Length: 117
Image (cartoon, rainbow, N blue to C red; front, side, top):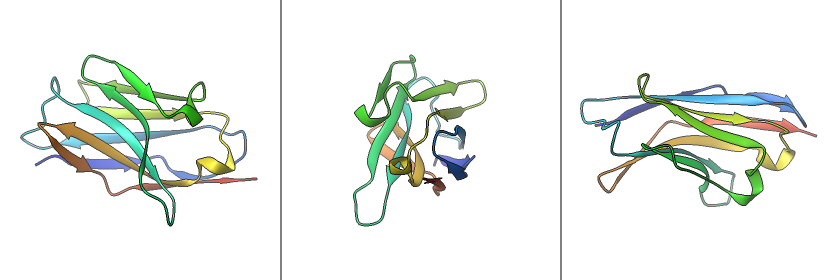
């Protein structure tokens, strides 16, 4: 199994910055063969991709966060980060860490991000 533990959420004002972290552990975690990323979910809507990064460092972002969010990973620490800047109220939601590996998805417990206007 792969276990994911997120941290860094909170309540901030519009325009503020936050950094989320997600540490992975587990005997089958394959640092060189997975994609790590972040999804966001708000009540009544499906979970959506915010940003992802492959083992080789290739990244992809939702259009709504391009230029404001940066995803990165530290393979030595088995950790993925999401640096969020210029936060907007529409960024509010529960952010879930995700690892895609060998056709399986692993999820963290989620961390709440609330951006007040």
